[in-house]
Length: 246
Ligand SMILES: NC(=O)c1ccc[n+]([C@@H]2O[C@H](COP(=O)([O-])OP(=O)(O)OC[C@H]3O[C@@H](n4cnc5c(N)ncnc54)[C@H](OP(=O)(O)O)[C@@H]3O)[C@@H](O)[C@H]2O)c1
Image (tube, rainbow, N blue to C red; front, side, top):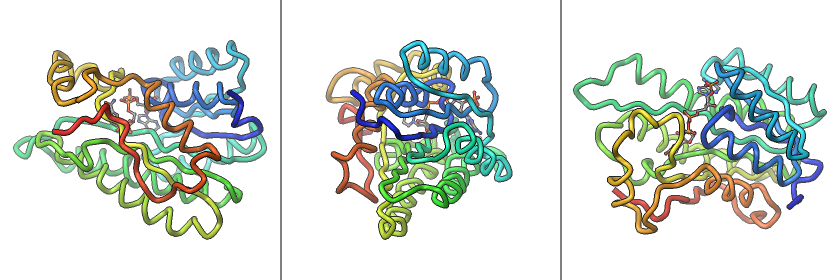
């Protein structure tokens, strides 16, 4: 379980939910991990403490990925803490219900500023220091390829993420930096607890494997994506969804 020994990883939005699961898994795999958050300092500290208690190394760094000026300080913070950067997991994302009737320009901007612009600018800043063999993982969603009305804007952001996974993979391949997308199905997290209340049976009904996902299901796929076993995988997005389709 130490295939990432000597590696340094940033996981954006890892104070809770899927990101916390990814941070803990990469640390268990041997990486030194930057736990990024924008508001939840206490939650980020809890994740860091869990990693340290399990024998790993981690620091929490605050940076609102939706704000372009906050991105470079996150990369600089990782370099200051651990001296280098090998892995970037673009996980921070916002999900809101937006029917055609109720969606607003503000909600559109909130989604795109974090889920798309933030992901791209963080990758740009990271790419300047990632070495050959570095890996970028973009957390997409099953809703990119199997979209659903009522979440028009969110689905569109994740479609954009899949396109960026391909274009970034094409550009960074020449430097032997891989870019891999992971598209989760429905996973119970703090972020969707309210919007998905009472809907577990609905999601389970759309999922051939008959259960909702847990952060550790997604973390296991990220662990593979950043490993040498995935050394021939780039520019593509892997579904990790129990087979969910709408
Ligand atoms: N849960 C699902 O069913 C599901 C399915 C498919 C894809 N996904 C994707 O998986 C990713 C994680 O989802 P989740 O459900 O785990 O979310 P979550 O429980 O809401 O957690 C979101 C995390 O992102 C951080 N965050 C939010 N805004 C941020 C910002 N502007 N800058 C930096 N960090 C920020 C939050 O920290 P703060 O509280 O400090 O802001 C928190 O740590 C997202 O990209 C989401 O689209 C989720």
